Image (cartoon, rainbow, N blue to C red; front, side):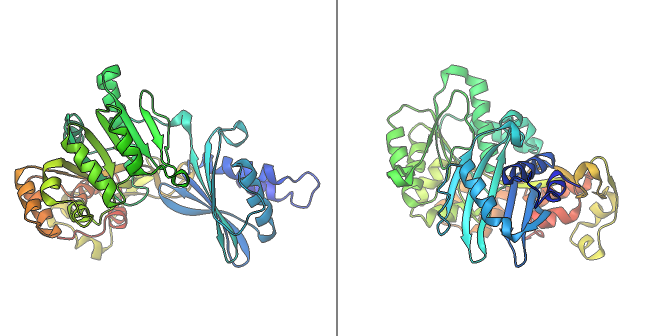
Amino acid sequence: MNQTARYLEQIGSPNFEIATLVNYLVLDAVSLRASDIHLEPWETTLVVRVRLNGVLHELVHLPRDLMEKLSGRFKVMANLVSYQTWLPQEGHAPANPDFGGVELRISIFPTVRGEKIVVRLFDPSNRSFDLANLGFEEDTLARFTQLIGRPNGLILLTGPTGSGKTTAIYSALCHLVAKHGTTISIATVEDPAEFNLPMISQAQINLAKEFTYPVALRSLMRQDPQVIMIGEIRDPETALIAVQAGLTGHLVISTTHAGSTAGVFARLINMNIEPFLLASSLAGVLGLRLLRRNCPYCTEPYTPAAPLLKLLPAEMVEDASFRRGAGCRECAETGFQGRSSLTELLVVDEPIREAVLQKTPTRALQEIAIQRGMTTLWQNGLRRVAHGETPLEEILRVVGADPG
């Protein structure tokens, strides 16, 4: 039984305090190594779920009549308007020993049943940004390190929300600081700035004050930066500034959302970026996913279901060491412990540039990249399965079946 469940037994007693309940909720999430807490009013209960290794798990069900008190407590912690229940609010609670020394980013959203609360957990004492520890495949790590060592050009990372893009970029920036020391000027424009990075100038956009990505970037170009990190390319104006900066002697690293790694080109062309500018500026695209690893304490051999085995090459079925976690106390009965990055790196070379100039369709561009040596997410995922690092079902959950 977790601390929250034990404390719930005291509901109705004069010693019961909502602040203590909130602290126990956060402490339980921290002990499980969760990244987020979700408090959501359901039909009859207020459910509390935690995100473990990217997947939500139920923690406890609370009485619905605690909703208003819990919401009020989180609002006080984040310095929000406690009586406002009809509009979304976002805030930040600094690290506190009472709830495990983690920082909290609190988001409150009105629903028809009441307010939904999502709390993102950040542990500043247990967060390092080291490229070597992200779990990149060896060839990806070597080529990505070469890309960020370029003096100019645009490097884009793509993947769904929560796929590790920001962590990878922060690690790249810290790598450059470690390599060049005080001889390099690095600046970022983010929304929001997730962590304070040493020796790096970080700016946070503020839409209420009209401090947008384009406004920040135009000013930043007069600050003599060598490396510019843009939190996300969302609009044509930001995209054009990023591309032009990559052409004028700056190394630009950013993220954008696209259906696939090769689909980034079509995404930017749809933002009215001329293909010749894109072909000249873009140096590489890194597709990212986060893959859950088998728990080392309870991993055991298994055989995937027959329909899944048909998706694999015959030689792999014969040679692979299929393993999965059975579930134990160490992994909170999930069978997984920790995650690592699964990657797909498209390096832009002359054939790719020519294809971009011709506005080659995304599928054909993907095939050219594979012919030029790109290993796909599916192929890298199967390597992890063959080595027993994760079950086949996890690759299908994260990547889907091989589109080829």
